[in-house]
Length: 316
Image 1 (tube, helix red, strand yellow):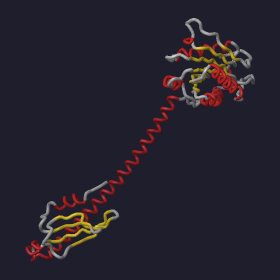
Image 2 (image 1 turned 90 degrees about the vertical axis):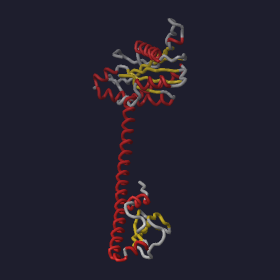
Image 3 (image 1 turned 180 degrees about the vertical axis):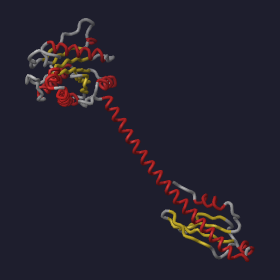
Image 4 (image 1 turned 120 degrees about the horizontal axis):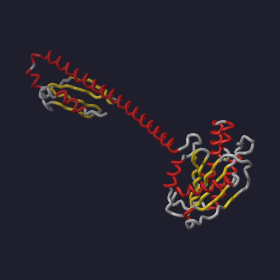
């Protein structure tokens, strides 16, 4: 906070005659303020040292010779008046300085509090935005974030979409309980997200026990290889079904090279491939091309990649 000493003292002295006395404020061989006549002043003066911050200034009052001659018979009173005036000016300067220093401290405290509040609001906003775009259980992006990412990705072709579903997951919840089922989902998410993200894609939780991998610039061969990596990762996770068989994934894969991108058709094609993987024994990868890549009604037959069958029948 900045205050003009010139304005301050001028406002204090503006009600007094300016020809009777000269008031000056000086320091460091520099004159900062002068009020009153410039010449015909008495040889003596009242003065007082004033500390303003780190500066030490001198406040002085010198009467004019004309005024002294007119008031010669009242010199004792003049001396007292000048002393009182000097004390009053000194008191006002120090009071205003301390008042401004106090207001400055209050302003600094208010600014610090405001900065802390802005920082906390920003943190909360980021947390809300993260919660809105991620699955709290697995820490993966959710379906909304996946669709937004697909729409915002520039020039993704060829684009591969993999829908992964845990086989017989209902038996896990029924036999071990939902808390253990939640742990299975978190472990699968941890094992499968790294290969997808390493390939430049996004691995998201689509709902329930389903996960979706979206891989831009990924052809059919690469998509099949990554899908196989995910299938084996589920087996290597150490998770087992109630019959002590390892947990497995069924994966449906669709690849498109056509613009404009129709995400619903891509996801539907991948889901159809997943359904075929379930029908044909689970624990396998089934690929199919997007419907828009071939003439209507002539969709290409699915290409299967089966390394291990999942024994038994059960829920999806």
